[in-house]
Amino acid sequence: MTSETPDTTPTPTPAPAVQPFGLRPAPSASAPRDPRPGISAVTTDELKAWLVAQGQPAYRARQVADAAWGHKATGFDDVRTLPGDLRAALDEAFRFDTMTETEVRVTDGGLTEKAIHRLSDGLVIESVLMHYPARDDARERHTLCISSQAGCAVGCPFCATGELGMERDLETAEIVDQVRHAARRLAVDGKHLTNIVFMGMGEPLLNLDRVLESIGILNDPTRFGLGARHITVSTSGVVPGIERLTALGPQFGLAISLHAARNPLRDVLVPLNRRWPVEEVVAAARAHTQATGRRVTYEATMIAGINDTDADADAMADLLRGELAHVNLIPMNQVAHTPWTGTPIPQVVRFAARLGAAGVTATIRQNRGTEIGAACGQLAAEAAGRPAPIVVQRRRERLEAQSAAALRGERSEEPAPAGVGEKAP
Image (cartoon, rainbow, N blue to C red; front, side, top):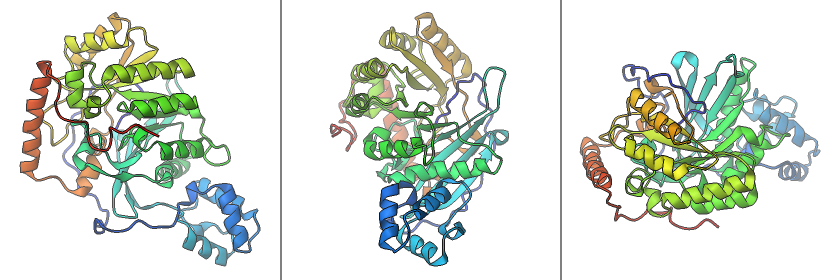
């Protein structure tokens, strides 16, 4: 899980382990999803047609929409502008909220709120709300990092979501309702979301149709109404998805989870690189910039002794020199199943300076929510239950062997993760 604004503040010492979540036990893994559509993804025309079929005037669609996006109602029964029998009928046909439970943890003196959401089939996803107070050179901002999948198929080994594996794509309403939850919390204090980043659980470009639908809803002035330039979509390098975005010519931002510029190492850190090597990813990002005029952000999680050397900085500089690009560097959050640790801040500063000297702008980003496990997937992994110690040990041993081979310059012979090698439609 990543924050939106660069910062060179050192990572605070983690607090003692927090108590387990108070969410009710998950239903059986075979529990079916609630078949009712989420109201946040129902179009105005669809809602009007449903109302007319119920013998209701079409104008009530506006009343329902106002309640859904007004940040006060938490269910149809709160919409007192509607007659009781209609409220009951709406509740039978639609879900006002696709999250059956939500628990929020707050840290960083109230600046970071990590939410874990339970879905109707028992799966859990995460979102993180980050507050940035006004400074001399910047206005107050409230950025939400949201998930696009339950779990992830890419399997980056430094990411706790990879520990969970892939469960399923999120529905459009399940993506949007993460935003509605955060907006309701902010509205209590008279504040509003200023930025949304698709940098949570999952690979957004492997669920691209629903991600695009959710962006359309969030951008719609009659619904959430957030400007496209305040929305960023991140990808680990799904080249066909980037090409599809380029063809659409969107105004929202594009971020690339780069992590390493050398293919042997990126094969290990971003297994999707075995399907689309880093040069192809950067070429696709370059075409996106040429078509949209927008700068691409490259993210690099810094891992001590793995991807933070001078050689790695030089390789990244060679890869990105001349691009309309910016690099964000962030020390790795500790993840149970890896043998690695985050790069110390002085070494990250050295890495950033080496990039800058080569003409590639870079900044260091502050870790947020380390006391509550705010790295992507950490709390969902906690809620799902930690893997057995022997499983963790085997993963660590495999990563040690793979990273050692990569540092010798050996390309991985393993295939790309299942489900990520197909070209997007």
